[in-house]
Image (spheres, protein in one colour):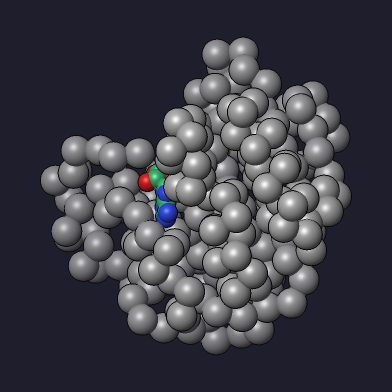
Length: 200
Ligand SMILES: C[S@@+](CC[C@H](N)C(=O)[O-])C[C@H]1O[C@@H](n2cnc3c(N)ncnc32)[C@H](O)[C@@H]1O
């Protein structure tokens, strides 16, 4: 998701006291859940509000998008939410052995085969995530895209994950859910939301 920069981008980013630059300092030992590609941040913000005993980091590579999430989060004073503006590929050192769960919500599907390595569930990214997890590995993915969903299922199984929970129609299941911006858009179009929880 690339956007024109909102006018307030630099001011919001410069004055944000929950933006992580080089060190993670939650000052408690609660589990850490991260969303890779948080977009405008509705999901991670609501998850942090709903779960005060879990720490959350929203990661977004584009500052023009992340600043919208920051602006929303600044309306609350949350000790358990931080944001990183960077590509997950650059964050191995910062997040190594710290993460308990990864959320991948409506990740870019990269439909062309020659771009398959860029999918956030490619074997290359799964290897990176292996380094980030503290202990048990948990990946939760939601998508509108059938091909990406099937690709992710295969890729995760081939990389040693077990699929613990799956739905091909999340909104007609009993699985608790917090909606993302893309999810609202796609479900209004009548597209069924696919969901998986994989563990290793
Ligand atoms: C299609 S949007 C989905 C946004 C949000 N998760 C939602 O469901 O509404 C995907 C987002 O992931 C971000 N993204 C893609 N690859 C990324 C990466 N390697 N590291 C960090 N963010 C990434 C994009 O910039 C974009 O904002």
